[in-house]
Image: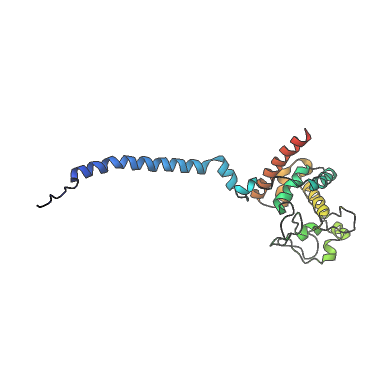
Length: 221
């Protein structure tokens, strides 16, 4: 016995199904586009993408090491700036001195990442460019040389050496620089920008500064 051949859908039915599926496809595409645009336009994504930090990294290492707080406070009181600003810079520059080595690819040195010419003074012979300079180690840490050439390096512990790799010296030097750059007058954004000429850097430091200020207010209540 011969089997009957199954008939497929007629051209008319296929056309009708295709006609019905088109609006569904358009709707799905439109909804996808709206969701994607909404995500990209959200304030959180805008803010996060505009910074140097990855979104996940913004919420790590938020705890200030307690042993550093007295140093921040002493330096901040000496130079008339918020101690939480120093903590924010320390977090951004070396993640509270956990980076190894404390030397950037462009030559920034120590706990607070000073370029040698900024630490010793830009009027030092040979200083230029990014600020690496050709400065002998004995001059780089000599408070008298630093004073002569208008640098920001500070001998905070009184050992006769201003050393960017010494935590106290580095924190006090950063406080000195930020103070003279506008922080002592309340212009934090100007001071931060002087420290690193990047708007993204300013946003990142201010992010942690605000977080640490909230922490300060909490512990002082």
